[in-house]
Length: 191
Image (cartoon, rainbow, N blue to C red; front, side):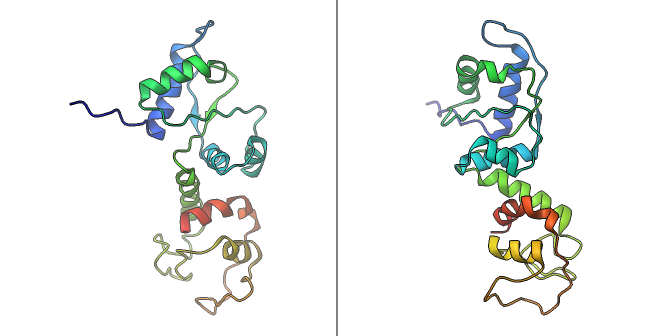
């Protein structure tokens, strides 16, 4: 008995797209440079899966795209099946030499958004909060489970939402409005 092929992971999908670019597809069959992964585009892909329009998602992530395209593939049984689909139905986008970066999301899109949130958290929050958001840090309290409303109020404006009781009475955390585009990702990571 042979087990059914497993669907490609986002890593497998990334390699499959680049294989289609390197081998060429369609009538032109020209080879183009491989795409580079970009976490901002992973977040764009997650937003698309959440129902946002491509232009809105690109703008929300502040991605400087002169041109963009979206390919949605559901239930590709294997990397081979994905390759066949990409080279037959989406060749013009896959093999477009103007594209240099790629973002991928799998499932409901939460994984890519949470992954971006983790990167933001590790880069911006560890000075005061613990690497494990469920634990207290040297200055900041545990933040696991923080809602988007709480993050918007505290991170962006330095205040708490109405009716919220702070875990610590300190007012050490300054507002960080530059993190506004990352609030959805932080909320996805901390939930």
